[in-house]
Amino acid sequence: MDKYLFIILVLCVLLVPIFYKTRRFNHFWGILMFILGLGALFLRLLILGDYPLLGFFNPKTIYSSALLIGIPSAAITLVVIYTKNFQRRINRFKKLLLPYILFGGLQQIFFFWVFTDIFYYLFRDIKITFLASVLFFCSIHFTKRSPIKKLWLLLGLFAIVNAYVYLIWGNIIPQLIVHGILGSVLYTEFINTDQIKRRLG
Image (tube, rainbow, N blue to C red; front, top):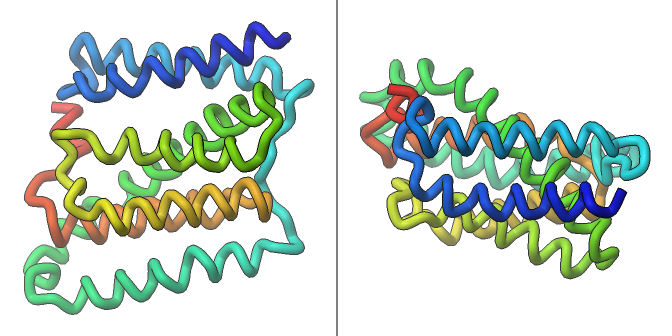
Protein backbone atom coordinates (compact mmCIF):
# COMPACT_ATOMS: atom_id res chain seq x y z
CA MET A 1 0.00 0.00 0.00
CA ASP A 2 2.92 2.35 0.63
CA LYS A 3 3.70 2.34 -3.09
CA TYR A 4 0.42 4.19 -3.69
CA LEU A 5 1.49 6.85 -1.21
CA PHE A 6 4.74 7.44 -3.08
CA ILE A 7 2.98 7.47 -6.46
CA ILE A 8 0.47 10.07 -5.24
CA LEU A 9 3.23 12.25 -3.77
CA VAL A 10 5.21 12.08 -7.03
CA LEU A 11 2.11 13.04 -9.02
CA CYS A 12 1.53 16.02 -6.71
CA VAL A 13 5.13 17.20 -7.04
CA LEU A 14 5.02 16.82 -10.83
CA LEU A 15 1.90 18.96 -10.93
CA VAL A 16 3.81 22.04 -9.76
CA PRO A 17 6.13 22.51 -12.79
CA ILE A 18 3.31 21.42 -15.11
CA PHE A 19 1.05 24.05 -13.57
CA TYR A 20 3.79 26.64 -14.26
CA LYS A 21 3.66 25.68 -17.94
CA THR A 22 -0.12 25.65 -18.18
CA ARG A 23 -1.58 28.68 -19.91
CA ARG A 24 -4.76 27.01 -21.15
CA PHE A 25 -6.59 24.12 -19.50
CA ASN A 26 -7.62 22.72 -22.89
CA HIS A 27 -4.07 22.58 -24.29
CA PHE A 28 -1.40 19.92 -23.74
CA TRP A 29 -0.02 21.03 -20.37
CA GLY A 30 -3.47 21.77 -19.01
CA ILE A 31 -4.81 18.38 -20.06
CA LEU A 32 -1.75 16.66 -18.60
CA MET A 33 -2.24 18.60 -15.36
CA PHE A 34 -5.81 17.38 -15.03
CA ILE A 35 -4.85 13.80 -15.88
CA LEU A 36 -2.18 13.75 -13.15
CA GLY A 37 -4.46 15.53 -10.68
CA LEU A 38 -7.39 13.18 -11.28
CA GLY A 39 -5.01 10.23 -11.14
CA ALA A 40 -3.72 11.34 -7.75
CA LEU A 41 -7.27 11.90 -6.51
CA PHE A 42 -8.38 8.47 -7.75
CA LEU A 43 -5.50 6.73 -5.97
CA ARG A 44 -6.27 8.73 -2.81
CA LEU A 45 -9.86 7.52 -2.86
CA LEU A 46 -8.64 3.98 -3.53
CA ILE A 47 -6.68 3.87 -0.25
CA LEU A 48 -9.10 5.94 1.80
CA GLY A 49 -10.02 2.97 3.99
CA ASP A 50 -6.41 2.39 5.04
CA TYR A 51 -5.46 6.07 5.20
CA PRO A 52 -8.52 8.07 6.31
CA LEU A 53 -8.84 11.83 5.94
CA LEU A 54 -6.95 13.75 8.61
CA GLY A 55 -9.57 16.48 8.68
CA PHE A 56 -13.15 17.08 7.64
CA PHE A 57 -15.51 18.21 10.38
CA ASN A 58 -14.46 18.39 14.02
CA PRO A 59 -17.43 19.67 16.06
CA LYS A 60 -15.15 20.56 18.98
CA THR A 61 -13.13 23.05 16.94
CA ILE A 62 -15.42 23.99 14.06
CA TYR A 63 -16.40 27.35 15.56
CA SER A 64 -12.80 28.22 16.40
CA SER A 65 -11.77 27.18 12.90
CA ALA A 66 -14.46 29.31 11.28
CA LEU A 67 -13.53 32.32 13.40
CA LEU A 68 -9.78 31.97 12.80
CA ILE A 69 -10.28 31.88 9.05
CA GLY A 70 -13.45 33.96 8.80
CA ILE A 71 -12.64 37.05 10.88
CA PRO A 72 -9.47 38.18 9.04
CA SER A 73 -11.01 37.20 5.69
CA ALA A 74 -14.14 39.21 6.49
CA ALA A 75 -12.00 42.19 7.55
CA ILE A 76 -10.03 42.10 4.30
CA THR A 77 -13.25 41.72 2.31
CA LEU A 78 -14.89 44.69 4.03
CA VAL A 79 -11.88 46.90 3.37
CA VAL A 80 -11.72 45.91 -0.29
CA ILE A 81 -15.40 46.02 -1.25
CA TYR A 82 -15.72 49.67 -0.24
CA THR A 83 -12.96 50.86 -2.56
CA LYS A 84 -14.04 52.80 -5.64
CA ASN A 85 -12.26 50.29 -7.88
CA PHE A 86 -14.24 47.37 -6.46
CA GLN A 87 -17.52 49.26 -6.67
CA ARG A 88 -16.91 49.85 -10.37
CA ARG A 89 -16.32 46.12 -10.81
CA ILE A 90 -19.19 44.81 -8.70
CA ASN A 91 -20.84 43.05 -11.65
CA ARG A 92 -17.57 41.30 -12.39
CA PHE A 93 -17.38 40.15 -8.77
CA LYS A 94 -20.85 38.60 -9.05
CA LYS A 95 -19.73 36.64 -12.11
CA LEU A 96 -16.56 35.43 -10.41
CA LEU A 97 -18.09 34.41 -7.08
CA LEU A 98 -19.66 31.02 -7.85
CA PRO A 99 -16.94 29.60 -10.13
CA TYR A 100 -14.23 30.79 -7.75
CA ILE A 101 -15.97 29.18 -4.77
CA LEU A 102 -16.22 25.89 -6.67
CA PHE A 103 -12.66 26.06 -8.02
CA GLY A 104 -11.28 27.21 -4.66
CA GLY A 105 -13.03 24.35 -2.90
CA LEU A 106 -11.54 21.84 -5.33
CA GLN A 107 -8.09 23.32 -4.71
CA GLN A 108 -8.48 22.92 -0.96
CA ILE A 109 -9.58 19.31 -1.36
CA PHE A 110 -6.51 18.58 -3.46
CA PHE A 111 -4.09 20.49 -1.23
CA PHE A 112 -5.23 18.76 1.95
CA TRP A 113 -7.01 15.47 1.24
CA VAL A 114 -4.52 14.47 -1.42
CA PHE A 115 -1.15 16.15 -0.82
CA THR A 116 -1.17 16.91 2.95
CA ASP A 117 -2.75 13.59 3.96
CA ILE A 118 -0.35 11.56 1.84
CA PHE A 119 2.68 13.49 3.05
CA TYR A 120 1.69 12.85 6.66
CA TYR A 121 1.12 9.12 6.14
CA LEU A 122 4.51 8.82 4.49
CA PHE A 123 6.54 10.70 7.09
CA ARG A 124 4.31 10.56 10.22
CA ASP A 125 5.52 13.95 11.43
CA ILE A 126 2.91 16.66 11.91
CA LYS A 127 5.45 19.53 11.97
CA ILE A 128 7.15 18.49 8.74
CA THR A 129 3.74 17.89 7.16
CA PHE A 130 2.59 21.36 8.22
CA LEU A 131 5.65 22.94 6.60
CA ALA A 132 5.27 20.86 3.44
CA SER A 133 1.58 21.76 3.19
CA VAL A 134 2.30 25.50 3.43
CA LEU A 135 5.14 25.27 0.90
CA PHE A 136 2.98 23.28 -1.53
CA PHE A 137 0.21 25.89 -1.34
CA CYS A 138 2.69 28.70 -1.86
CA SER A 139 4.44 26.94 -4.74
CA ILE A 140 1.17 26.96 -6.67
CA HIS A 141 0.29 30.57 -5.87
CA PHE A 142 3.73 32.19 -6.06
CA THR A 143 4.54 31.33 -9.67
CA LYS A 144 6.39 33.89 -11.78
CA ARG A 145 3.27 34.49 -13.89
CA SER A 146 0.86 34.53 -10.95
CA PRO A 147 -1.19 37.74 -11.04
CA ILE A 148 -1.55 37.76 -7.24
CA LYS A 149 2.06 37.08 -6.27
CA LYS A 150 2.25 40.70 -5.12
CA LEU A 151 -0.05 39.66 -2.28
CA TRP A 152 2.56 37.15 -1.10
CA LEU A 153 2.31 38.06 2.58
CA LEU A 154 -1.46 37.64 2.63
CA LEU A 155 -1.23 34.37 0.71
CA GLY A 156 1.47 33.06 3.05
CA LEU A 157 -0.61 33.83 6.14
CA PHE A 158 -3.65 32.26 4.51
CA ALA A 159 -1.64 29.10 3.78
CA ILE A 160 -0.42 28.89 7.39
CA VAL A 161 -3.89 29.36 8.87
CA ASN A 162 -5.45 26.87 6.45
CA ALA A 163 -2.86 24.21 7.22
CA TYR A 164 -3.21 24.79 10.97
CA VAL A 165 -7.00 24.48 10.90
CA TYR A 166 -6.79 21.28 8.86
CA LEU A 167 -3.90 19.50 10.57
CA ILE A 168 -4.32 20.64 14.17
CA TRP A 169 -8.05 21.32 14.48
CA GLY A 170 -9.24 18.73 11.95
CA ASN A 171 -11.50 20.92 9.81
CA ILE A 172 -11.66 21.74 6.12
CA ILE A 173 -15.18 23.14 5.68
CA PRO A 174 -14.26 26.77 6.48
CA GLN A 175 -11.43 26.66 3.94
CA LEU A 176 -13.73 25.25 1.25
CA ILE A 177 -15.99 28.28 1.54
CA VAL A 178 -13.62 31.12 2.38
CA HIS A 179 -10.95 30.34 -0.22
CA GLY A 180 -13.26 31.04 -3.14
CA ILE A 181 -14.97 34.06 -1.61
CA LEU A 182 -11.72 35.78 -0.66
CA GLY A 183 -10.21 34.84 -4.01
CA SER A 184 -13.07 36.37 -5.96
CA VAL A 185 -12.82 39.57 -3.89
CA LEU A 186 -9.06 39.91 -4.42
CA TYR A 187 -9.21 39.04 -8.12
CA THR A 188 -11.96 41.60 -8.62
CA GLU A 189 -9.96 44.33 -6.89
CA PHE A 190 -6.41 43.67 -8.05
CA ILE A 191 -6.62 41.66 -11.30
CA ASN A 192 -8.03 42.79 -14.61
CA THR A 193 -8.77 39.35 -16.07
CA ASP A 194 -10.83 36.32 -15.07
CA GLN A 195 -8.08 33.75 -14.59
CA ILE A 196 -10.37 30.72 -14.80
CA LYS A 197 -12.03 31.96 -17.99
CA ARG A 198 -8.64 32.89 -19.45
CA ARG A 199 -7.25 29.41 -18.88
CA LEU A 200 -10.37 27.81 -20.30
CA GLY A 201 -10.26 29.99 -23.43
